[in-house]
Length: 124
Image (cartoon, rainbow, N blue to C red; front, side, top):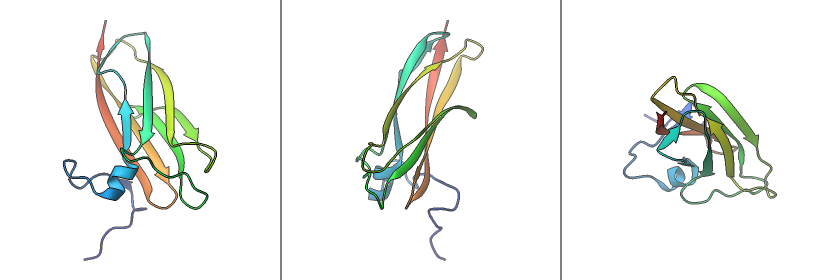
């Protein structure tokens, strides 16, 4: 059986405890508080890969999207050479739910889409 193409669906690590070199360069790293206060803004810093991803003309991250669960929050389009694969967005969560998630999807022009999710708690 042949390996699936990196462009077939969403790429996720096969073994999160033992990442491959490709996974280390493509899985988004989400940095935000574990607990946030309802109605108060907080920053979500995202970088693509625990090993920084290149931003060359022939190989780069094209965009980064941020979601609260399945709800779209923001998209940043990136330009090779002139940008890095890092963004920070300011988010506000309501108090209707006690737990939520920040989900990030990014697209590499050579290696497809990659996703990461971070759970957060929401306090009053």
